[in-house]
Image (cartoon, rainbow over all chains, first blue to last red; front, side, top):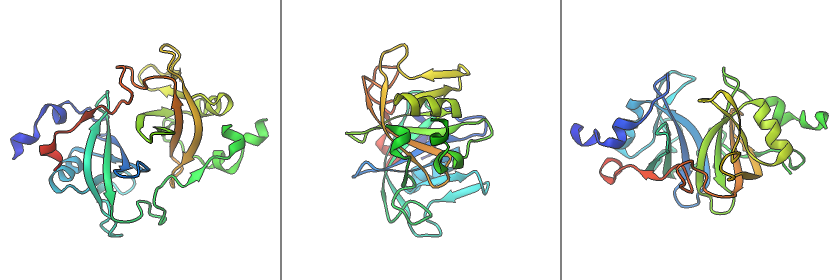
Length: 117
Length: 117
């Protein structure tokens, strides 16, 4: 099992100086962008093994199984890698609101129209 | 004009230790996630003023007007801010492929099914 994980995608991932990959989480059905978080190699491996999203909490400095306290786990359907291999896109089915505020998406505040157009 | 920009959203943005905000770029119509880049305050201000996406290039250490060489500018329709105020979501109409490889999205490589599920 270990060997099958060492395919070219995983080997070529480019972790930043803190050993992290920026990770965008998108709803697999609606396409809504739900949140952005960071993964280290351990979080990615656990995500691949369990098909649930794990991240590295930069504020708590610990592995973070998304949903471990809220129950709102993220079921990972697909993982895409960007051209620089330093950013991941997870397509997920969320068990509930992705944001700790209770919002479906962490991006619930829009900049005012007068600033954007 | 300066005063109108100093609304609560802009004041509350939480730039990281390098003065940057993680920025996700999503197609305003299809919902496809096109790329992830970083903005400093100057890039954000120019984006707000021109309605075209500007970023801070971390590799070149310079302001980056997306599309300045390719012509593939990003017309910014909406800007959303996440719960932590350290990440932006831009909804854009791209003038062409968003990726420097010519792909519509930078996320054109999918991890193998055996790894994901």
